[in-house]
Image 1: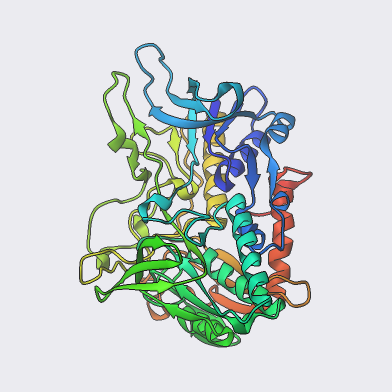
Image 2: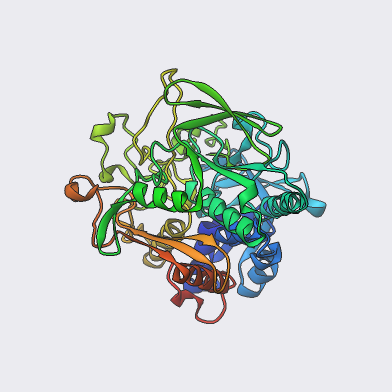
Length: 486
């Protein structure tokens, strides 16, 4: 009998647990530990953030589902890692702490044979002074409750300007020089612009995009050359076209370092310190690791064997010039090299380097996006980790047959550009590979132009809406859920 412990119940953790339970017999234990009681389909938080969906439409409770499916569940948070056990526990374990009910604040050792660390990122609002969702007129859509607060504030502002001649400024983008997830902010700014149109107040609002990107359409992936309507087009030109069409201004190469009430302070790549006023803002925070500590069986700190901010996996972390980076640096199995029974799919693994070119301001401040690893790649890497664990258990020896690097993996993204069954829109972008391979595809910006393309229109909205229902169906493990691809 094997015991597989999964930390986290987001896209990666939940996907791994579902596949493990489906493919392993009941004699093997699957246990999920997560501080969250609900699963949330994060991509649809954008629609919660404009009031087109309610939080209940993007979440469902985990415990009843796991109970039905034979998956163990503890509502708790990981405190420390003990991959060798300790003087009183010979098995490896995680020290966890309850976060709800009678187990609130109580700690216990949870042992395992295999560990999947799918804890994802810490939303590091604290790295930017004053960036606290719901204060200083700035909001977030990173969680369903944050998005709900943002929606209420947005519609309060819309109601105010409907009744007056007041002109307002809206600021949306990234709230830190190293923030990632530009895609979510991009979706949100387009949806907010569409809402203002629907309520007849678009002419009363100035909308500005602020981002740490060097160029529009970077998205933390160094931009891309794509096929669009039969022509080759850079993502920069595509996004610029969309913003110009909607009258959205932009500020690029910006590292937001402080937020006051209706006022953002930022530094640009020229080393200038500037400010921007706003009446409503949504800024994506930096993502960081959770600051876990790790100890060996004697109690000595071995954190450096497991963590480099996020978890260390089978990547090449050698420090080298940007020009020497390659797709071969990226992990394939997401296995920790020191402890072979520990894995970290999704956002939990430490990337070997950024994908976008690193840049610094004239003052030495790093201003460039961190690598995006959300959505589709999280599900794919979680499944391959689960399959390798399943094979290892069934064979009775380590098997790492399943592999998938972001350097040879594609991703499809559909960014909502406005909700509506007849008036909605979506920006559809498919890219291959995620990490550009400049040696193999040197003539087309590091990507296969036959597999990298974009489109804009109502069809994109319909596809994104269909995926909302399909992936919630899949997450609820309804009949034949596994036939829906990651």
